[in-house]
Image 1 (cartoon, helix red, strand yellow):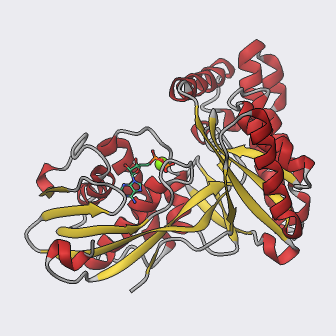
Image 2 (cartoon, rainbow, N blue to C red; image 1 turned 180 degrees about the vertical axis):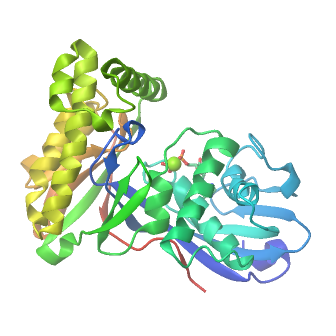
Length: 375
Ligand code: ADP
Ligand code: MG
């Protein structure tokens, strides 16, 4: 199915935006913490043509259903399904005072859906950059303008799709540069590029998708969020961003363990950034391991498959490994010597087979550039 066959004309251009993984800084975005995602080489590509009549015609090669309607029909909960990610971006830009018209859009390539690599933000970011270009909004050319596109994409996902996510995925997809990770401070949404080019020092990254997603994940996410907010309130702080380890010691039981994860994880992000800034990428492995231990022990958001993926990777020579994303399934990342990458992947697959788990999907990851126009 080609654009011209669907819409009876050629597109005005093609835009692409990447998926992401979070290197470190997990479950701290709702505590005003720091995270350090990087963009992947896997990208979502949209072909788009502008329309002057305010109509939207949206199709995707990954989905059987398309959507057709007008800008005026877009709002919270509408349209339902995948089209909400795209239509929602136009709606949010309009809500922010930007003049946008209708579009014909076809999604031709995609970041794997639902693998924890943020196909949703990739789709939003590709659409946002296309709309910015086609309607001359002038936002895509500067980090500040791109920040406005990030905010619109996040609002689309929160309000039109109805998914309560933070802004990390959209920031990573829109603002990343090749050979860097993106330090995102979720207190004020400020960002900084941190050098991160594992290949230059003979290392590589593997993303290990366990292909499991345990059914209690959403409820557990809400519970963690609530306990972190409660811990901050107990300490009389606006968030755990400002908490010290001494504050953590003053808490008790479960609240103490949850808060300890947040406080130590934010410290680990700072240490990781210090090492990367100092050209000591090869030394970050223990921080990845410690992050996993904290997420599994204190925060209790790991699961047997994620623990096994990390343990098997380490045993086969990974410098460090941790679950990434929300947990209870999804993906882990491992930092590996390039000449051991295949052996590590094989060892993880073998360990999964031995345990009777479904075969994991293992992909190499390369810190890549953010959203861009292709043609
Ligand atoms: P993730 O972002 O981790 O991949 P999400 O549940 O946040 O998982 O987003 C996945 C959803 O995003 C899909 O179910 C679909 O609605 C939408 N989506 C992502 N990529 C595409 C695509 N190429 N075509 C259509 N919809 C897509
Ligand atoms: Mg998503």
